[in-house]
Image (cartoon, rainbow, N blue to C red):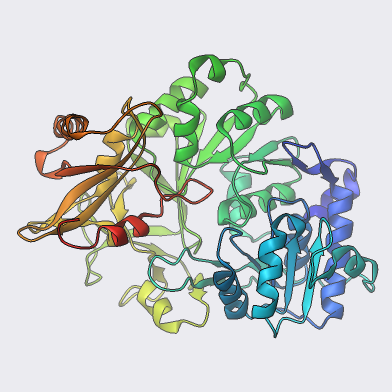
Length: 512
């Protein structure tokens, strides 16, 4: 389905509410504005497979643009508003976007990219005037007749660029109309999570990320209400759950950690009993963190493992996880296979590269056929990987170990940083932690913990030794850090995802 179905039945039902301000757009408004915008884009000459880009803060108009693209066969590229102007311009140029939408909330960045994009003739701004952009409201007002054919479009989002420039992940367009079933994410949100018209979904993350954008879109397809935070705040999220009677939310593990770090009096003063599902994904969740959340919110946590490439999804409920502690679940979309570096499938219990089997190739990297081929299995062309490592147990449950690119090889032995990070995450003196491999002249690499301490705690050699001993008491000694560095902060995205490549780059010389 799509918003038009729900607009016909309940035009005044809120489609999106901004958590902090209470600003709202209804299903009637979302359907009407997105239909007008789809017609206007058609009038500008855009046709199926063309691209529009949006550079915004968490503004309600994002969903009008998203649904205008989805109901007219276009791709929409949402851009990280924290990038530098040259990085933004690269993505817009690489995506071949012919229309750029911006919000006044990112005015300085939006204005700075104008001279870098001489080929983008159609630029529109909402929220207030932005120099170099025509008013978004004017484009809607001048829209022609609404489209009758509504081929389904898609997002085309860009990877974070672990090495080199980020690449556009271009899903294959489905041969369906926007109001027909077939979108896999909407199907999973409906079948696995039973989201429907009565649900209120809290989205606390930046809308340019895959999960916030696609899950919010799925909630709209199913008729629920999205409550969108302008910016994540641990106490603010709890307040929003209580205020809006939120039933479903999706967070990343770092958000759980930040809420758990609140004073007990703060955590308990908010009523979160309306929640029936708390979804988490995007990064492995330390078992102690997950157990603490289950103890607090009850067995309502559901984890899924997937990627922006949407090549596969595995899911696990709280009750399953308590029996298969540390697993990310069983099949939701695609079939997982664990293979060695040569593509040979490995038996249960052995760590290898995770491939997902689909009937057809689910995506390609835009303008990068070589990288697309690298993501494919050597002999099974519709099996694809994003470079994650893990293993399957005898019952078919998937367990993650780490990204292949971050595996530490010390003396020929593989060490997975995530295992050590899990030990340290809830240490009473630690606010944030990352574990990386640094060069070692004898062993090749050694383990280093980079630690941000809680406010008021000072890092010194004695504390470093205590932390190393703490880890040695909980995992094999060879996995424990050989050194600990104390830093003021760690590089994380606004969603809380660790940008580990920046730390790896910093400590890339011997003796760092």
